[in-house]
Image (cartoon, rainbow, N blue to C red; front, side):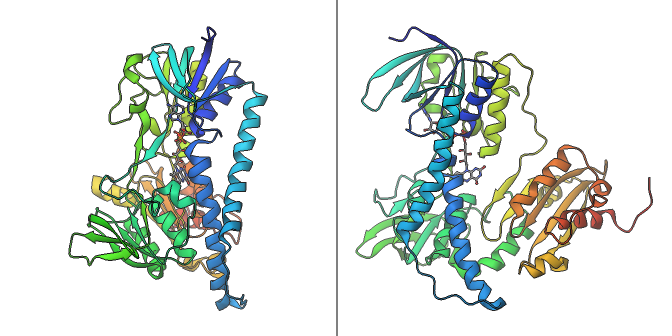
Length: 463
Ligand code: FAD
């Protein structure tokens, strides 16, 4: 029995948890970080953001090589070495998780490997892989337990029916693949597998792909991606899946013909892990797995904080990191709050779609009066030179205050450029601030300044 009382215990070693643990240690706290997996990094580094981007990078390079044949360079037919590709994904992940382990050691963060559950408001029980349970007492705790993929109960238990974690293992490249769910994760994996040679069908129960993104952006993406998909079945439910000698026969409602697939990806959403922690022992409860917190990330128990996917949408790594910093700072006695004006989102599909803050469609739906500045990349010299003239940058300014409320971009590197729109929104910039900021030429980022100029109209008078 361990009688030491830790100053701070963090449950979960994902982006939220390790960021919180490292910040708290930097602020002088004595910290233990409990993670059930051997490596730190959580979903994001091990089976999410990073391995998916490694595969997307390779699939995009293969497709780019094919596109370049139109621009004067011809390569031979691409040959796929799945083992080498898996090794590249693995090396990318282990460089990062190894780095985190070192950062934990440098900060003297005590790592505990095991599954934690509350046994009281100041004590956790941690079960290791061998089934041994030890008690860890704490003054303060940060819950960063993340989320897990939702599994549809009627699907057969078979290695050829995978969730995002299984898909990232690249078991094989199927001839025909069904992707269940037309959200970011489903379409990212569809982009990888189709880039590597699979034919894809998508089934999505709502009326559109990529919920939350402006429909004009999705329209541009659809035009550029029709070659990937045999069918995109919207407003459609998968009714049943039966094993057959050559794969699985899937049946749909809405009049769609049944089809046979050799790989099925379930990407129908993620569920927060809050209901797997025996919260009631700490006097807490979850709502469908989500844990309620205030703007300082405190739960209903003043000594227990929660951050990241387990506290709500958006389930994104950068949100978890910022919440982790706030929780750690508050736990260490500092004044901090999590009150961002905006949280950016990126669909790392091809081409990338990035958006932040108010969208055009939401403004229209909610009757918010905005001035929209659009810059089609067909007018950007760099986009034309890069073969990306189909892209678009859009900014939305409040008609009442003139301030930037949000924006969206589609095109290569859109996610990398979105940071400027996030910063400008947080700083309350108006169209003149952005339009008169000199952007480097010729760059794709220049389209942000030009979209702001479009919103300024022809007025060049100084105020
Ligand atoms: P997690 O990363 O889920 O970490 C929680 C950790 O807690 C896990 O390691 C888990 O093992 C551990 N844990 C849980 N319960 C216990 C317990 N009781 N005891 C001990 N340990 C426990 N987000 C982005 O921002 N950008 C992207 O590009 C992106 N791509 C993604 C791609 C895929 C395929 C997936 C699945 C997700 C992606 N995400 C992306 C989402 C991102 O991974 C999550 O939002 C992020 O990982 C959440 O961080 P977290 O710290 O809240 O939780």
